[in-house]
Every structure is written in C-alpha cells, then in structure tokens.
Amino acid sequence: MIGLDEQITTMAARWPTFTVVSREDRAAVWEGTLDPVKRRYRIRVALTLPYAIENVTTMQVQPRVQVLDPVLEWHPEFEEGPVPHVYRNDEERALPFLCLFDPYNGEWSLSDLLADTTVPWTARYLFFYEGWLATTKWHGGGRHLTDGEGTCGARAKSIAAV
Image (cartoon, one colour):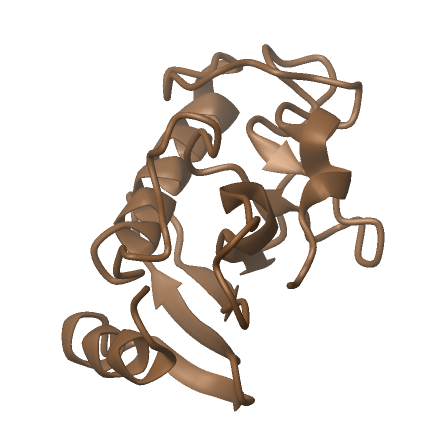
C-alpha cells in the first residue's frame, strides 16, 4: 500500500495544478484543474487509506473523484444518460463520483499512485464526456451498469470510507 506522503509528493511533482486542500491521519483531498479539450474543469480527488488491508475491497477504498466546476450536465435522453459512468452521491447529488475503472477487475489498487492512474483517467473521462455532450453518444468504453441514476450508479452505495 502506498502511503499518503508518497501520494502527496508524487501528485505535487506530476500534477502541480493539484494541491492538497485537506489532510488527516489517513485521508487527503486534492483539488486542481484539467483541460482535456474544450473546457477547463475543477476536480476534487479524495483518498482514504484503511487502517488494515485485510477484508477491504477496492470498492470501499477507491479514490473518489468529482467534477466541481462546471458541474456535469444531466441528459437523460442521451446514450448512457443522464450522466455516463458516475456513482450517485446522495450527499451532493449535483456532484456524482466518476466511475473511472472497473473495481471488480483489479484495474486499480492501493499500490497505485493517483498521479499515474486516477488523474490521467479523469482527463480521459472528461475527453469522452465532452464528446458525449457534442454527439449524444458515449465512446469511452467501460462496463455499462445502470440503475436509472447514471451508469455505475447501481453500486454507488458500496463506496464508503474505511
């Protein structure tokens, strides 16, 4: 498991627009900007490390990524609408969590650096999101789960801080 200090140091070196806005014993939150194609997005990345890794699933500890500004547009009439590949956020419905990888296929683990995985995947997501807005079709791939709240929403309630 990569510690928070290494995550913070690596993020600062590779993504200088992202800064730590909150730090606790086993948790950190970064905010920064990404410019995939047409728009500039303000992003929040939160990571909480477990006290022990036994019996912890990727779903429970995966990074939580949100688009703060501009907020994601909802289009229920689009392919994979209302918003593609997001987890529902019951506390802030306008700020869902991005579904950037399949947590059930080992695509991310606590041994991965956010700077190498999560931030580039977020930029890729936003690239395809902008294409989705322009064409109404999602071309970004991924597993297509839905519960009416957006894809990946069916498992949203499983995301919890450990």
